Length: 124
Image (cartoon, rainbow, N blue to C red; front, side, top):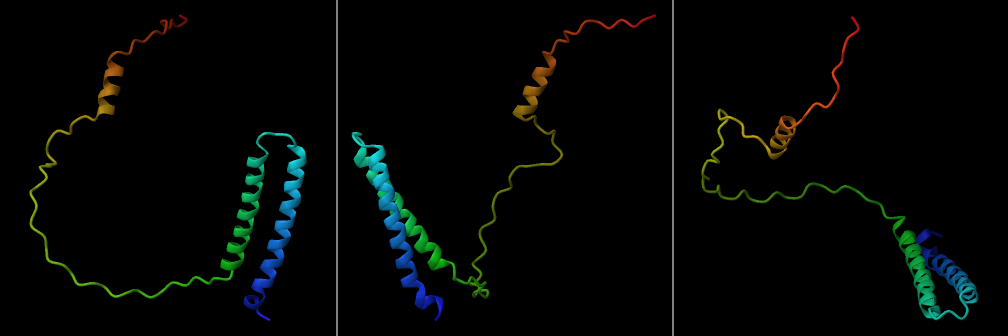
């Protein structure tokens, strides 16, 4: 027997086991939070957690046997018409390079820096 023919019975058995374990867990939560005004929210959270675990199990079991293969290169389309010539960007390499904002900020900080260290006197 192959995995594909056994997938449905195996999944159903495991899903039922998880569902029953989840119901037991919900009963435990009911006993822990007995009398709480938010018991319905706790039950909905537990039930949604159970359903999400079952969905996760299904996805893992379904896609674990999928084989990925790189396909061939597809057909290349026709080359389009050449576009119109654009205007030059105005960039020249011989100009003086303008300062960036970060460089200006560093220059201002260095010009305002005051050395507050006491003078060092050498032993003579």
